[in-house]
Amino acid sequence: MKTSKSIIAAFFLTILAASAATIIFQWSPNDPAEDIKAYNLYEQTGTNWTQLASVTNSTVTVSNVAIGSHTYGLTATNILGESERTVLSAVVIPALPTAPTNPVTTIVIQVFTSP
Image 1 (spheres, rainbow, N blue to C red):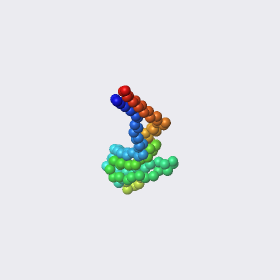
Image 2: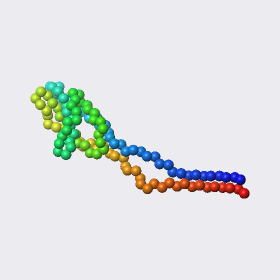
Image 3: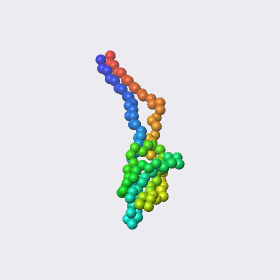
Image 4: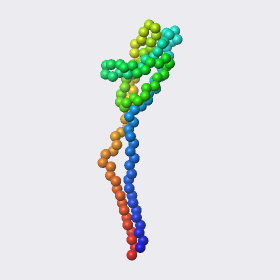
């Protein structure tokens, strides 16, 4: 008795959506004559600004930035005080598309027998 089976099945891979990103901000330092003590990075939430970092160089990294739109501002400080905020362009952290719904799995079984 000869038997042959053919099975076709679909398999699905699940990819989790990114939940956070890292943004690196860089800028040209002010003129040395301004005697800059620090640069302050702020994020706007509604009408409020929250300081995220204060650095003495011209680079700052912000980690764990959530998916969505974010607006950042930068100031410089010296012994006389803090400058006006330079508003950086809004940063958008995109989300992966949602997974397809109602997937269908097809299984085809062929059985051959000989007398």
